[in-house]
Image (cartoon, rainbow, N blue to C red):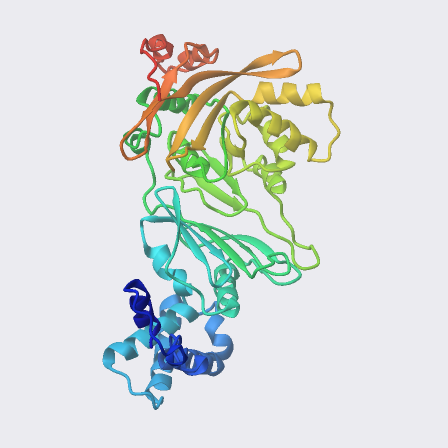
Length: 463
């Protein structure tokens, strides 16, 4: 008796008398035979033959992507046609496309990278791929064949930009041709297999109008931020991981007038500048012996010799903070940067810590004075619990009181409810603080109406 029949018998109280005949097997097919997949075997066999036939040509930097793809398809067509496995035209096309994606593309994550609804791809070993859509994580219906295929994809990403990853250098930051940010880490540091994280950049540059339409900012806050950038105030964008700092920095940089010389400095190039006069600098990792290393702070110091009107540091994360502060304090007003912090107050504390990481022994009061003198405005972003990314505070750095740098909010996000879909309702509202730099902006010919800072008289809504 089959298990399903046995269950029916129990439910109807008609238990079979001959228990010896009870058949509890679900599938008697041997495991090896059951898991055999002729198509998968063919794909693996054809790929191995292709790699053997093409050798080093598969990674030839001198060939264009189009030429390389043409060579691979031609070689692969010959290999597949010689296979004894009968294939329909559709199956033949599927086999060739699968191998081409594996060898020249990014394997199973290729469709995810092409999906505009996916904002981040997270590979936790070959058998688990997560994606982020609208701020929410979900398990993707895709897997790598094995760790070797995942490692090939990682190498294909990092090799074209001169990065490397191996046992002597088991983690790397890189970028895709479209600017998407990549981090990879492999064993022995990644215990369960190679890990790959790709934060996709939208093909469309967000504008200030987009931020307002999406509810990420208000017209009033954007108006003030734009005036601050045009008026050469030094501005920091702070926030947690994935809170939209770099995207916001792109928007802020769009307010820089044409005719100014801009030098951008990044660990991996991500900024998309719309101005004509831009010089982009990118840090370089060292080789296996540590030689050839060019750090962010080396580039900041070099940028000061390049006659910049603006210095934009993609992210401050170490000793370059001191060089950036010195640039802000020595005639390079209007500089921009981002840093990780939980609040604008924490941002100033983080700057103190990063200056100390530079290895130059400075008294804390001197560091705080540098920060207070250099930084004018802090724009803080956050990824809220509904997955939305918003500006949640715009603050002025306004002097030192006792042992603390005073950070005074100008606009602050106030939540007023939650809609039927679980999205947070709220917006940036003025706190009533009129920043001291408003007079500087007015002197620079930028009209700022003081009514911009008047708090709205609205009743709080209970959540």
